[in-house]
Amino acid sequence: MATNAEGVVVLGFFALISTPIVAGMIATNDLQHRAVVEVQERIFVTACTSYKEATTWERWTTPVYWKFGWCEDYLHRM
Image (cartoon, rainbow, N blue to C red; front, top):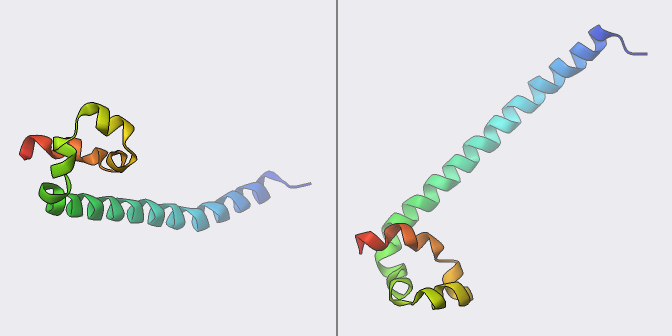
C-alpha cells in the first residue's frame, strides 16, 4: 500500500515532467496562431476578393468559402 509520502513524490515527479511539456505545447500553439494571423494580414486583399463578392448564401453553401471564414474580419478593410 502506498503511503502519503510516496503519493506526494509521484505527484511531484509527474508535475516536474508534465509542466514543461504543457508549457511548450501552449507556446507552440501561440506561435502557430501568430504565424497564421501574419499570413492572413499579408494576403487578405487577394485571398478575400472572391469571398467579398459572394452572397451570404454562397458563403454558407459553397465549401470553398467555408475555409475563408476568416475573411469576415478583413472585409471592412477592403
